[in-house]
Length: 301
Image (cartoon, rainbow, N blue to C red; front, side, top):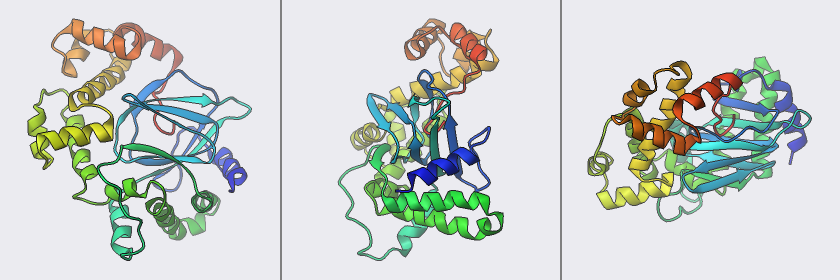
């Protein structure tokens, strides 16, 4: 595999943030391991070229290192940390945002015998596999286009399609294909996840969200747990606490108001659950984050 060239391209093009001149293509460079930090995963392919990362989703732990890739098929609350990274050998990663419409277009063009048989049930929202030589080669060619502005507009969309095709026909193909199917179990759960994220401060009944997702309550609960490793109520709590942490970074002296804003009517309960999640009371954690200038880490950063 072209890992040496992949490392060189990532090191050369890594900038102050993780965006690039190609829409949807991301680059990550981390020079030191940080304590675990919560964030949202995004819907993304992440390929590690150097270093290693550990990601927690509920009670599931995912680890990936050089030559491996992770697919996050739903935007989920995760806790991540780089376990191998230093200034001499920084952690280097490539990311590609996964668009349902692009996956759907490829599925429509594929012949009936071109795709592996789908597995049973709803897949986990996150999965890790070894990258094939063909996938690494396509990623390398995508990154080469960062040095070729004239070719980028024409060739980058073609290479994106190839990367998606390698995913769709690879080990995690069943998961990626469900991203592009409007009526797949994963798509139903994605809609529920999106609704809970947008209404995280509101109480809700699981039965109502299940009905909104087009599932029976029992099927919804089972599939939601399979994708997110959490119950719907646990998921809502994760979102509330992460939003509270972001708010406290700019409003550190208003803990009660922040707790109420994210849906906690009881300040003691808010402080207790916040401390259980992040290891410190809200005000102390917010002060520490400001002092060290921490940014929560997701799948790539």
